[in-house]
Length: 457
Ligand code: ARG
Image (tube, rainbow, N blue to C red; front, side, top):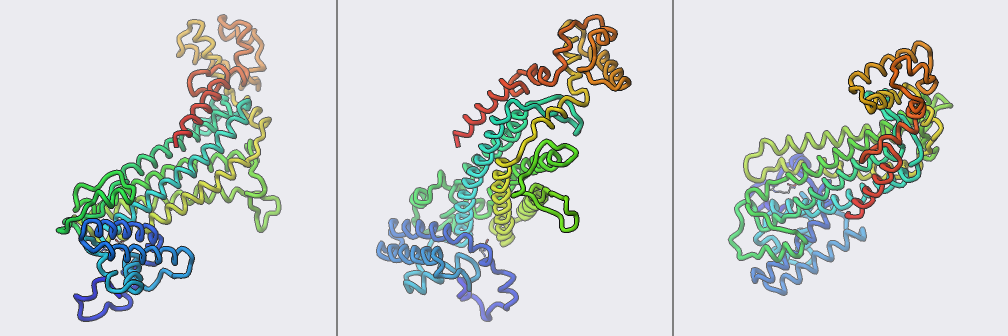
C-alpha cells in the first residue's frame, strides 16, 4: 500500500512505480529507519501526543520487524521505499495503531535522519579501516628504518630517502583522512527529525528527547534547511575521494616499484594475478583496480554536487539520488582499504635493489653543493660548481663516490678530504636530520608521532 494513495483516482502505472521506487537500494537503511522510528514513537508517547501504551505497542512492533529482517525471515520488498515498507509491516503486525507512528513526522525529515544515522556509522567504520591501514604502514616503517631508497621528483631520482620515511609519508596522508572523516562525522551529527515536511510541526513535540535517544549532538535549527541538506553526503564522498586519491598514489608506487625495471618490492603470489597468454607474467591487478576505482568515487562526488546545486528550497525528489552514489562510495572505499591493508603487510621489500638504485643518478649532488655552501660559498655558486662536477662525471662515466679528492679540488680548492664521506648514500640521508627528514632519527620520531596521533581515534 502507498502512503499517499488517498489523493488519487487511479493507481500509478507499473513503469512509474518502477522508476519512482527506492526500496531496491534504500533497504540498506532498514536499521536506521527502525531506530529513528522507535525514538520518534517514544517521544510521541512521552509528550502525550499518542498514548503511552500505543507508543509501547508501536515500539515492540518495530523491534519485531527489525529482528525479522536481521535474521532473514522477513524479505525487504514490495513497497515504494524503506519508510513505506516499515510502516506497512507495522500496520500489518499491530493493526490500526501502527498508523499513528507518522504523527508529527514526514518522510522528508525521516529520510534525512535515517541517512545521517547511516552515514555516521559509515564514517566510524571508515575511520577504523583507515586506522588499520595506517597501523600497517607504520609497522612497515619500523621494520625498514635502516633501508635507503631513491626519493623521486618528476619520477627522476632526486635524493636518497629512508624507506621508513617513505611509509610515514602515506601515514601522514591517511591521518589527514582520518581527521577529515571525524570532522565530517561531528558536523553531520545534527538531528533533522522534527522538521516534518518542511515547515516544522504544530504538535507539541520534544526534539531533545529524540536527539538523546538517537545520540545526536545537536538539533537542526531551520526546518527548511534540515529536510533538504545533503552536505554531509557530499562531504563524506569528498573525504572518501581524497582517501582514494592517497590510496591510488600508493597503488601507482606499488605498480612501479614491483616492475622489473624498479625491482624494489614484490607483491606476494597470493595478491598477484597472471596472464592467460604470457606464462611469465605476474600482474599487479589489485593495485590497478584500486587506482581504477578511484575514478568512480570521484564520479559520485560530481554527481551529488550536481544534484544539490539547482534545488529550490526545500525537499525535492532529486535528493533520492544521494543514495546509490553514497552506498557505492562506501562499498568501494571499504573494500579498497581492507585489501590494501593486507597487501601493505605482505609486500616483500628488496633492500639491496633499493639501496643500489638510491646510489645512482648523482642523487647526492645536493650534498656536494651543501658541502660548499656550508664553507661559505653562496648556495647558487655552489650549485653551479656541482653542476660542472656532475657534467664531468657523466663525461667520464663515474659516480660521485668514484671521484678522488684531486678531481673535486680541480672544481674548487675549497674541497677537503671529508667531501668523500659526504657524498655517500647513507651520509646523504643521515644528513637530513630536520623534523620529518630522511635521517633514521627523524624517521623514528615520525613513527612515534604517527602512533601517538593514531591513539586518539
Ligand atoms: N525515497 C525518498 C528519498 O530518498 C524518501 C523521501 C520521500 N519524500 C517525498 N516527499 N516524496 O528522498
